[in-house]
Amino acid sequence: MPCIPRRYVAPPSPFEMKRSFAGLLLLVLAGGCGGSTPPTLVATTHAGPQTYFSPLVEGSTVAGGVAGVNVTYTIDDVGDAFSLSTFALNSNQKGFQVADAGFIAPGARGLLELGLLASYQFNSSGQSVATTYTRQQNQPGGFALELANQAGGLAQFVGEPVTPLVPTTSECPSIGTAKTYLFVTIPGALRNSNATVLPLTWDPLKETAYGSVDISTDGSTVKLANIKHSLLPSSGGSLQPANPTSVAGACGQSIYGNTISIPGEVSVLNPGQGQTNPTQAIAGISPSGLLVEDNGTHLASTGLSLDYLSALGAGTGAIGLPRPSTALDLTALTGAQYMGFIYGAGTSGANTSTPTGWSSHLASFGGFSSVPSTCPAGTSNPIYGGSFTGDDPSTSSNGFGLCNVTIELGAQDPSNPGLFPTARVSIGATYVANTTRATDSFSAVAIAGQLNGKFAIFVLGVDSTQPWEIDLLQSN
Image (cartoon, rainbow, N blue to C red; front, side, top):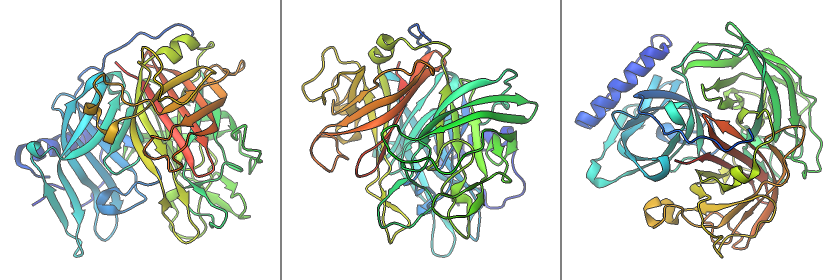
């Protein structure tokens, strides 16, 4: 019998979630069931099980191949174990469902390699069926990166897109004095010229690419004020519709732990549809300052798609960080070493609700003593890096992988430290998801800052084929 909760009773508290996930992991593993100055490097401490909320990202098909669900990760740094779960109330699933579980093998430069021990899927009779593996089979599960003290991170499960992780077992944020955050959209698939407006897509000619927001709290109330939405500077489009400049949310216990709910009474005009639709966004702010939002577009069960939201990002959500108080030291920023992921959101076709051509790959940037000849050229505050052969870090003798992608940050906005509105990305011919087989260069926007004393960089751009997102955390 698979060790899976089969009956939903009530939303669990963060402590109960943490305790139940830890118990599931033990059972699975035991029996096959179930500013301006360089940052100070802080090693990740082993703090034990941490539960993370992870927003929906286009391309996700976890939970037995069912698309359109949020993901919850539990990562146990002490027990070297992880689990990936989903929540749904339908004919098959009643509450939380452990979709995958396994072990953690700590890798170089802070990388966590996830090994799969058990996965669960519903069969045609609605029963959850387990497939189990041994450690010796080396069944790949994916990769994760955690900030120090498990205060957020990034994860990519095998066959899935990268998703940001925000901890939900800690208490709600307490921000008495408003703090400004920068954010970029987590893109959905690019709509082609024949595509109807579908959920989870992103239109860079009309919808938010990046922005800023002032966040403060008063008890359980979370105030999002002075919200500024912007298109990619190179888009040549027109932002639609006019967005509200403020919105209130409430932080408290939810099915995912302590998260921020953006109330559904806020409505905006859907671009090109002449309709108003409510939004129900879910957000989290980690103790390190990592801001993550799921914009709730996939929660629509009927009617027109909610392809735009009134809170932060478009696409499927947003990722952000506190705006630095002063301009970042560009020498330190571009000279640091990073681990992260490169995500291509694909294209939404005219006759399908799922994207085509999306990709997500582990990436490494920086660390080269000299610029390899394989790197695409870069001149304006460049950072060089790229993928690993076969997404396997062990194929790299120096731990820094290939050099087939270049990020040019360009100039830092003098009015918004940490914002790089004229960035560029060049994807070389050898990058596995570059179908053109020629260097592909395109305009982008980047935000950068520090999380727990280490740099983080989030980049969003779009070429003629699809949107691209690059998420990087400074490595150990």
